[in-house]
Length: 223
Image (cartoon, rainbow, N blue to C red; front, side, top):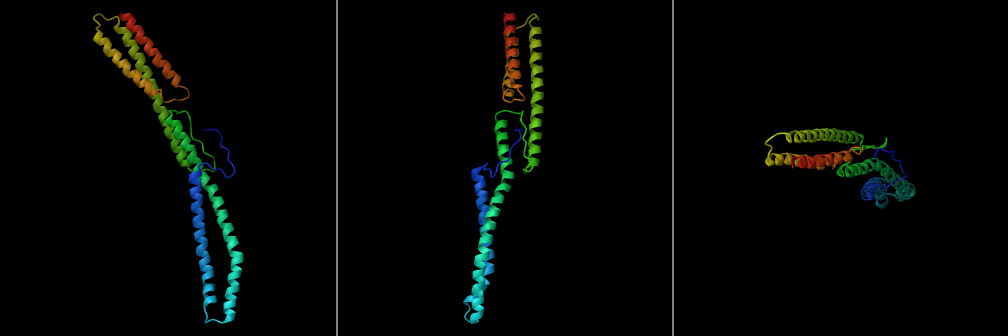
């Protein structure tokens, strides 16, 4: 996610969304051209159809209409095409970041907290980029805090189990309570394993494995 993203010529990132926006711009362009054509041609058309005017005036209006046809429409069509092409480029500065955010959501849904969103310099949504990265950084800090607290809790429970084996009058029901607490912590460790921060998922697995080994050793000592 952090690697440099190269800009391609006229890229299609989200085909459905980009084509919809492109069609919308073309429709707006055609509507503007039609209104422009109506305001430009209608007065002369009315003059040409007005039988009360002289033939010279009506002929001049007809000549003006023909002149407009040869000059206005090619320019208008070229303008609409240029606006449409330019709009695709502009929309990509929105759609490109949206595509990057989709990839980020997939990574986050998979439990990966090691990535950061990096947009291109000319892309839009840089404020959202900063807010998203701050959110990931906050989640990472909370994950690390939970990781350390869980490690301390398992080590503390292991020390307690080792200590109580030397206490006289230790009952099976007491051992069951300790096993129950260890089960809760191991279940919490399994949930934390879902998130991965720079390969620390393996550390979580090792921690749970050591906890289970200690549990087995304590049972053998009690026997």
